[in-house]
Image 1 (tube, one colour):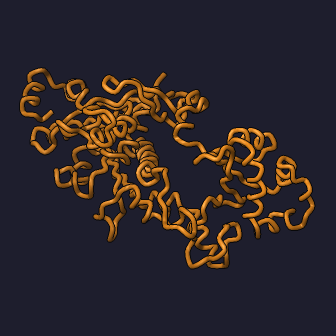
Image 2 (cartoon, rainbow, N blue to C red):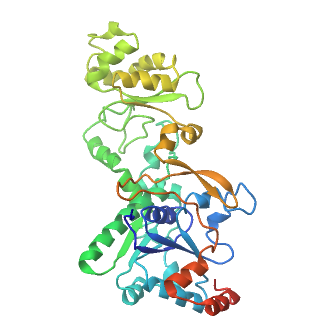
Image 3 (cartoon, rainbow, N blue to C red):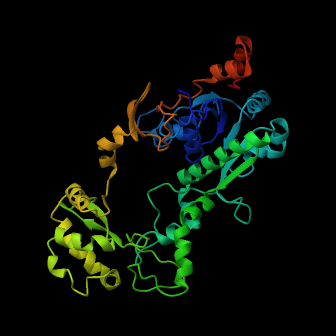
Length: 410
């Protein structure tokens, strides 16, 4: 069975997280992703956060599956020439270096568009054009400047970053969408194009509901928020659902750090919920009967439900509440996730064997295509495919390869 992106060649000049996540998804979809790395050390994450000495870290292996590794010194003239040859034979170049890094090596968009007019040049940077464009960005900086941090946490606490990597991996998903769109457009025009995603912009896009609420706030307090006071911007609101229906994380038995279940209360299930928790006496009570009545004392409403959830484990509560159609979900910690049978059966948690590390658990592909199944393969060793790629793509022979190795170009 063919893959969705079979026949598409990607030159992957990315490092750390944002870029590699994007190119990993391209590889999962069937593209031939050639990761170009500096000889000797490779992607910096190969050695970051190592748990086994002198073995590629999980940081690297979990972001670079299904790729081929080519070591290439692009600071040398032979290395730059090889890269030019490779780009002329490729469909997509992806990079997430600091602003201007590839330009200084001579790989400007202007020259790339002349030398390889069908090439799609895809780039992730911290910020878009403007006063911030040359500033450095990391995951949490993108969260801070994209609106996520100011709206995450509790109103009496400091701004908080979210555990989900919405700055790095979130930007990667945005770039993937842009690359796929550019590939489709190229079918009509025959031309490549420059595709750019800024981390700040991606986070802001994911925070669009907060800008919705900012504009609503100008006309008065946000009734669905649990906050008692409102200023001129959207406040941090703890575990409030952020939607039209109130929700909260409620404690469960036996009371561990993640023994919680998140429950959303829809109007039409209120009576069933009262019956489930043994409070039928409140049915018909005007203080509890309507959403408008309950919203004024949501803390009491959720305390009422929590008195029931605390008598059950989060999984017991999940099963019982699902039986009466209450939207809810247990808070799954990392141990829960790696042991979850449904995630393993669906291929979202997979075990991969590595020649140096041995078996390790990684996240599978969340994109499901019926005609393009994904098999998760291990990340490449540094330079593992250098000779293979140069023979296959550029047609180099033994003598040329030996010369390049002697010059430490590869």
